Length: 488
Image (cartoon, rainbow, N blue to C red; front, side, top):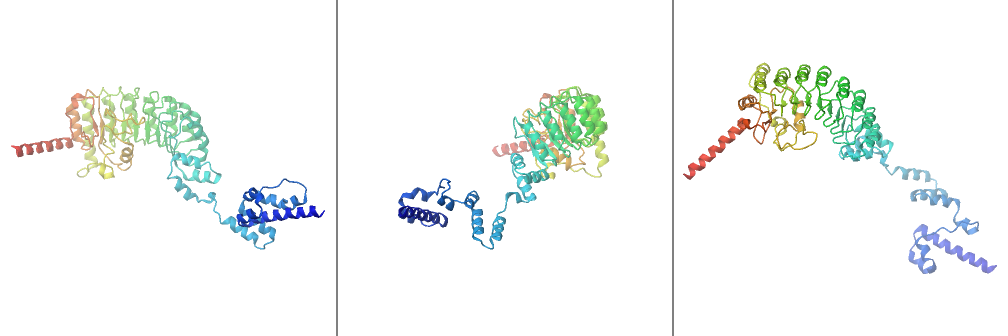
């Protein structure tokens, strides 16, 4: 009996020593010297198997099981409570309040941070928690899904309810976008004002019906390359969205018709820019009705509308007094009458709206140097290549960038006179008529640095030059004469 009690006492002493070292951080070398057979237990204290013996119940009670599963800071609070400290509750509350949680971040700061990151991060942050979802949904007003690939429709359907205050959405070149995504988004984005759906080849009239019912506040709509949209769907959209100011129908062969133009003239009288590039079914009937109903028109691109004649240009120049950008590329039915009509209208407009000498328009006046008149290799925004992002190497498009278009429409509301004209591949025009237009509008340039008058593809228009080109040529000739005089 004495030997058994001695062995139990020795085992209790060993375990007490080991637990004291583990709890209070004693030197490991002391325990190694005292108990060389328990080196492994000194590195990691293993829990003995649970049994009903006295030692097991003594060293591993219910309190220790509960304390074992808690974090270290809560273990210490639990031990203080077990020891009966009077201020343990205060210390525990203080330790918990000292740590600032990530969900306590102010909404203004969170929105400010997310405004500096990419759209993928914004979408990811909206799914972190309910607090972040509400903050992001209330603070984010612009979003782009152009970075998404084949799963763009599923992403838009799942994310649309998180952004109820969205004002602008870009779905540029999302060829996998379908009608279901637009239908879900239109039920949540009732305040949407700008939407870009370029090259949505899977979209149909169902998407237009959904936008007409759910997004009546639309002001900017880009449908370039959406070949599945027809006249019926666009008519339903135009009748409900009366605030449209910018509409891009490039490549919408079945949607760009005379009936649509007549509906725009009736319901969207504040329209300022319209792109009808490659809409081959547009005729003079639709353009005449549109010009009469939309007098505030500033920019129109008719490149590829082969059925229009001089009558369309006559009504546009007569009714739309603020017209400043006109694209007529590949309109082979135009003659010199259209050019001389532009000159006549300009003279009448200048006499009515000018009390003195008209201030010449310049890109420097709005803090931009070459946004309105860009070289041929620059990227256009309102032309028939705007959706694809291709370069205008053939200079057959309207030479205006997106930034220049916005500045042209917003910062120059009273601008009178053309600053951009595209008559490339118009073989019926004479050099005298085009030169007269270039002289009448001093903001039209043929020089490479400020090109805004495009005449490529017409061999009979190679002699057309702006005043800048003439002055540059005269300056070069003067330098050549000086050099020859110095050598002679």
